[in-house]
Length: 500
Image (cartoon, rainbow, N blue to C red; front, side):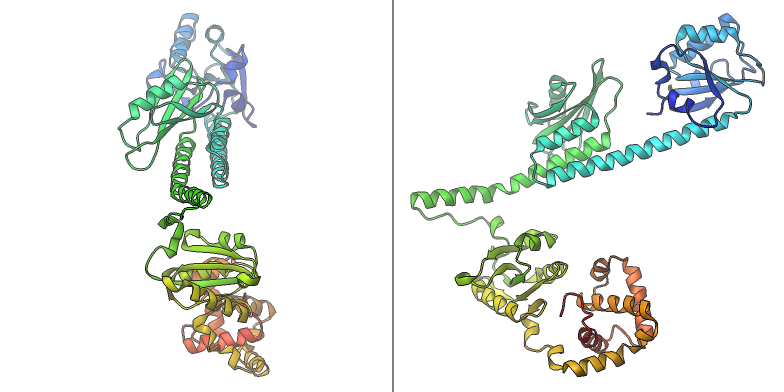
C-alpha cells in the first residue's frame, strides 16, 4: 500500500511533518488520494484515507476551531492534513499543531514552491506503481500455482503457496464445510464453515465473506455448474484484504484439478481390476472408452510409427491434445521396429502430424486410413513406411509417387539455380529470409499460421515475406504448379525444414 511515509520520501516535494506523527503507525497509514479543500468542514466530500491540503484562507485555527477541524478529519479517517505556507499563513498556527498532536493526526507543512497539484501527481505515480507491482505479483503467483498443479503436485502444495502469497490462512473444505487441507494463519475454520453453509444450494458462482476484529474470511465454491463439491476459504488478518482475483483464479485451478483427477478414475479402476484379475486367474474386464481413445469408436484410424526421436515422452509433449492418440513405445526386435507407435482417428491425423513436425529430427511413417478392427495392419504399414522415410513422416498416400524422387539430383540443382536466381540477386540477407519463409510455408502445406509459428514471427510478417518472394519470382504462390516447382527447387537445396 502507498503510505504517508512513502509520499514524504518522494523526490521534489517540499513536505515536512510538524505534528501528529509521534508513532511509526501514524506515518504508515495508507493514503488513497489528495483532496484540496478550503472548507471548514470538508468531510462530506471525503471517503477516508485522503491527504487533505489547504492554504487556510477560509478556516480559522484558534485553539477551539482547530480542535474541532482536526476532530472532524479524524472522525472521517483522513490520513493526514497539509497546510500550504506563504499564502495566508507564514508560520504553522500553534492551535493546529496542538490539535494535531492531541489527535495523532499527521500535520504536514507544504512549502510555498510546492504546488498542491505536484503532491497529487506524486501520489498518483506511487499508486500507479503499486498497482503495476500488484499486478506483476498476481501474474507471477498465478503462474506458480498453475505450474504446481500442472506438474502433478498435490493440491496441498498449491494451498501452501497461496497462503504464503496472501500472508493468511487458506483451506479447502469438503461439501459439508469440514476442513480437508489447510495452511497458514490465522485459522478460522468455524467462520469458513458458516460461510460454506450459506453458499450451499446457491450455485457455483456465488461467494460469501465476513469480517470482525480477528480479520476477514472469504469463501468460494469449488465445482462446475451449479453443484459445489467443496469450498476454498481464505482468511486474512485485520486490515488486510485478500487479492480477490488471485483467490478466484486459485478456486478455478483447484476445481479443474479435481475434475482432472475424477476423469482418471475409470482408467485407474480398470487397471486395478485388470491386475486383480491376473492375480486370481480370471479374465480382465473390458477397458473403458476413456482409456481407448480413438480405438473406442467404429470409425477409421491411422497408425503413425516414429523411429526418431526414440523418446516417446518428447513426442507426446509435442501434441496439444494427447487424448487424440494412443501411444505404444516399441523397443525393437521381435516386437517390431524400434520407436513409438501412435494411433489416431482419421479426422485428427493432419493436426497430429503438424504438431509432430515441430519435433527436431522427426522420422517416421503414416498408414492409410484403416477400419479400427484392422489396426494391426495399419501398424505394420506405418512401420514399413518409417523404414523408407528419409526425414519427416512419410505418408502412405505419398509413398508411391514422390516428385522429388523422380528428378535427377543434378538436374534438380540446375532447376533450383534457375528458378531461385531472382532471390539470390536480391542479396544474401534477403535470399536467406525469403528461402526460409518459402520452405517453412511449403512444408506446412501452405498454412500461414503454423508456418509463422514455426518461424517465430507474426503471420502478417510471413505474408509480407511471401508477397516479396512471389514478386521477385514473378510467380503466383497460390498456383499449385508453382508450389510444386518450388518444392523441387527448395528440396534440391535442402531448404525444406525437417526434410533431407
